[in-house]
Length: 236
Image 1 (tube, rainbow, N blue to C red):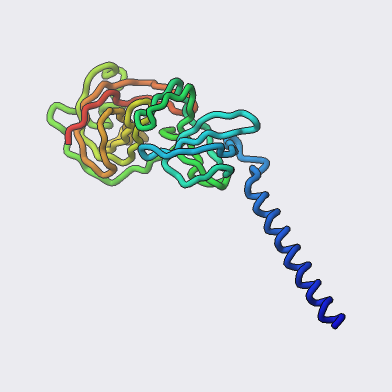
Image 2: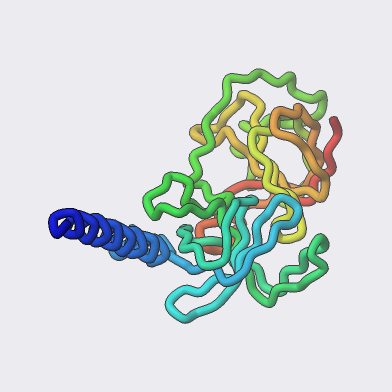
């Protein structure tokens, strides 16, 4: 009987220790990782909401509370998530939420791991969008991407037309959509052209773009473009 009782006590003790260990691990998962890579932020989610393909998060970083937005992601209150530097928007109005944010940072993505390859700044040239093997027939009277880059100084402020394939699309940032296109041509290492427009497209669409050439656009936080097309009209 004594031996039997000792075994019961031992089992209860093991279960209790296991429970304590489990609780400890759970709490550890809700604590930010120390010694983060340079440029990485660890934040605690205070509240979140989804709208128009984005997740808006009210976060706390070492007592500093602010808003960030990333492509729609499953998160919950209390989660610790990580992101790299983002682009700050002042007085940003979300039509979907019918809300104006005094300040909000748009980031490429958030992650529950600080070393995730997805933790990068949106639209940054550091994204290294790969060159696709495509061939687009040049528009009559239009420009190629190679020509726009090589003639950028003389084309600044002028309206151009070109045809290309959509390789990346980010909606509703700075009250416009951000479209990356390629046409198979290049000027040096410049083969991907950023286009901003109010119109919506899909990755894979072949479109005709008509817009104004802008050079040396710097939106801050790494969002710098030597050449881009602004306020474009899209013709499919």
